[in-house]
Every structure is written in structure tokens, then in C-alpha cells.
Image 1 (cartoon, rainbow, N blue to C red):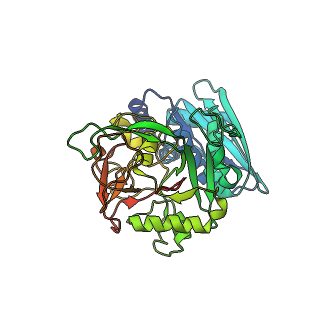
Image 2 (cartoon, one colour; image 1 turned 90 degrees about the horizontal axis):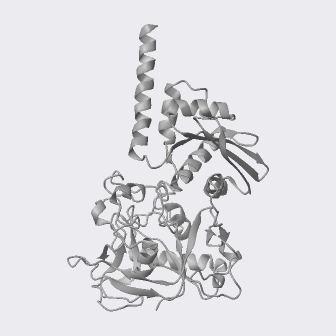
Image 3 (cartoon, rainbow, N blue to C red; image 1 turned 30 degrees about the vertical axis):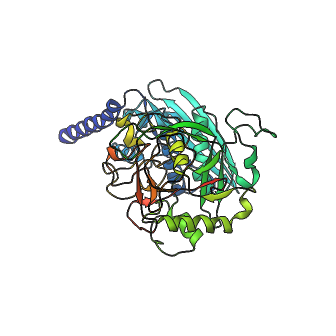
Length: 429
């Protein structure tokens, strides 16, 4: 008995040290863990686990708390012989789990299905006091995939009291109504409509956000780089840009190809030539023209559009404004990717809600690649042999990826680490 008790105490000490090390790395944010939502009527335990994993990812992206990974949480609770599962339906249960994990806050809740109506209820508990400090309810009439991608995001936002910008089908939201540059538009855009979902026939979806017109400083004042000099660029028209690179699931549906059919649908397409990307845009345009507003086309972003969206108002080397220590939370590179592409949208976005703009896969732009002119430019094409690649990839070093870094590759090249994302905007000559 003494040996068992000693082993138990040592295990508790080791696990507490593990969680404490997480707290020490990010002391500016309180620690929190997300238990598996309790599966109620119409929900299987495996569905509840997947939805809870997604909820934890969405909660972490909002950056208010340091979230203990679900895997680490399960390891600790199993070692502590917490209970048969890692779900809780009562505050006292969540407090007990939080004490074992050594975190300040715990999130628990329930999920129920009645027909096509899903109801997610979440609660946040202060482990030290046992008091419930937040709660949220999200009702969504949808399929399980939409609940996974949208419902959990909405509930995470609601639990933190943050506004939901909303998501809308393009067919329901005329693009001509958008202008976030402060100008008067007639008719005025409905409040909060800043994003939409472009739905494909196989259940895959492409999420977009709107980027308003504006002027910014493009490039950098590093005389030894190909992104010199820094120069002012004006974008006179807004555009919609995909929130992630195009994935295998989306690409297979549009090009009707079995290539890569065994690859996880959420991984970004890789080894894609510029010509392949252009063909994808044309096919998508033809197949889903009914979802487009007149005068808008599906295309690659210009290089200026790409950098403007990547910076999202930032002026430093990275869209996290130069904080290299935070890069691992935003970008897959050689130091954290395992030298392979990673599922899109897993790390934190930039301030405009765009994921994987740096790292994971490099992204094609519409422009020919050439040296920058020193004068003011407006979406200007340069050169006639190589096409522009931006963002760096999963093999790049942290110092090789930045808001301004650029390179050129032949348009018919199929190289590792090359993918693309798309925009919907006015045609470019």
C-alpha cells in the first residue's frame, strides 16, 4: 500500500508540473481546459468528442485563455482515474477535473439533437471558487458538418461574450452592398455581414471574408532582398478572399479527379502548378456561376491583394507585428510542421480571420514575378517568365516567411510546398 501511495503522489506531482509548465510559458493568459460535451438525445459519444475537439480549437483561436490540449487533458484525467469518460454534466464534476489538471477555469456542457435542430449549451467554471462565470446556448438547424464548422465557433464566441460577424451564403448577400471603407453605399450592407460560405455539391465549403479597399506600404526596406523597396500601393476595389488555402476535399470535387483521393480532405493541396490553379478557378466559375454576383469572377489574388490581406493592417515582418515568439501559433514552418503539410485552419488566424497566410503551403498570385518599381503602383504585373509565390511553406525557416517575402516559380512547375487560395473580385486585365 505504501508503494502504491508513493507512486500515486509522484504521478500527481509530475502531472501538476506538466500543466504548470504550460502556465509558465504563457502567464499573461489564465489556463483553461475543455471537457467533452455530454452527449444527450440524438448525439453519439464519438460525435460529442469530435465536436468538443473542434470547440477547444475555436476557443483557443480567440486567444483569451491558454488552453490545455485535449490530448494532454485526457492523459492526465486517465492517470487520475477521473471517471469512465472525460465529460461532465455538473459543475462539481468540472471543478474536480480542473483541480486534477491544475487549471484556473473549466468549460463543460451538453449537446442535444432533435431532428435537424442541434442545441449546444456550454458553461465556464472558476475552479478556485466553484462559481459559474459564463454560459452560452447555441441552437442551429443544420447538418452535423455545419455544426462542426459553424456551430462550435458560434458557441465559443457566445461563451466569451464576443460578437459573431455571421456567415452567409453568397447568393443571399449581394457583393455590391459591401463597403467597409467608411463610404456611403446604397443600399447599406446589413449589419455584421462580413463573411459567407461558398457551398459545393459534395458537402465541402469554401469560407470567404471581405477585404475593403485601401492603401498600404508593400514590401520592405531590406536592400538585399527581392521585396525591396517598400512602396505605397492602393487597392481601389474590395474583394472576397478564402480564409484558408484550397484543400484536397475541395480540389477533388471541382476538378473531378481521383488523384490524392486517399489524402485527408482538410490538407491543403500540394505540388499544384500556377496553370492548375488557373484551371481550378475556371472550373469553379463554370460549375457554380449561379452563386456569383454579376461582374465578379473567381481568380487568384494579385500580389498586392495577397500582401494587403496577409498584413491585415500590420506593418512589421509578420502579421503578428514582428513577434517571432508567437509565430508557432500562426504558421506551420520547418520548426513545427514535421516537414509535411498540416490540415488548414488549425493555428491562429490574422486579425482579419485568415488562416495559414504564412507557412503550410506557399500560395500562387496572379502576377508575373519581377523586381519592384520604386514608384507608386496599382496592382501592376511585372516580368513574363515566372509567377509570384507568397507566404512560405512547411519546409521554410521562420526567417524565410514574412508578410513581404516573395519568390518566383515557372507557371508549369509542380513543386512540393506549393498550393493556392482564391478570391472573388472584379476581373483583372
